[in-house]
Length: 162
Image 1 (tube, one colour):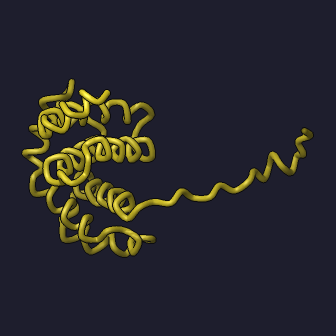
Image 2 (cartoon, one colour):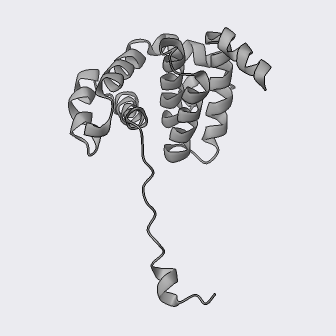
């Protein structure tokens, strides 16, 4: 097959992958947590600004608000829970990975209707999109340990199936 110069300069457009309302919410939650953690924004400020962003209307607003508020309210507990499974002080984690770990840990503890593997996979995808090069591997390992602690029955049942 012959490749034309115009083909190299104009690759076929990729269709954006369909994102569920929950996936979109998680992206907005991550943005909000980043504003809170790095920029010092209040929950009220984040809740007022994020819904003005493009495509927020396609997100699950209730999940966004509940998770954002929950992570911020429980951040000390979540930090302690995560710190038991990491190899350095929590404050030394990248802000993106720290926020994703808090969000994932919050979901594991507070959303038993969502299988733990789904929560971990969503966290991995967020980290691949917004985090460092191999951050997703770290997030996967840490959240796997948190899942074993927070959801021991589900974790053991899944291990038996493998």
